Image (cartoon, rainbow, N blue to C red):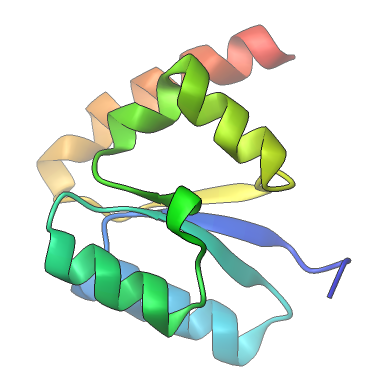
Length: 105
């Protein structure tokens, strides 16, 4: 599966679970990481998609830290992120990641 598209899901609730299932069943993509504040949901999601402990984050903000960025690089990186937080939180998440993308380009 080295050619598989690698995804990280931010928010492991019903929306994140639905998108992850669709990726797993309908594409060659794989879920390689999750960021979820609820430990029970995070752990269940991690187990369901065989996500390593170091790629299961308690908060999406961990991803924008130097340590979080290093974990992403060490894991082989991600090709896409699914923002599956509550609707009113999407903008905040996107702003942080768009800034990272700007510096990466």
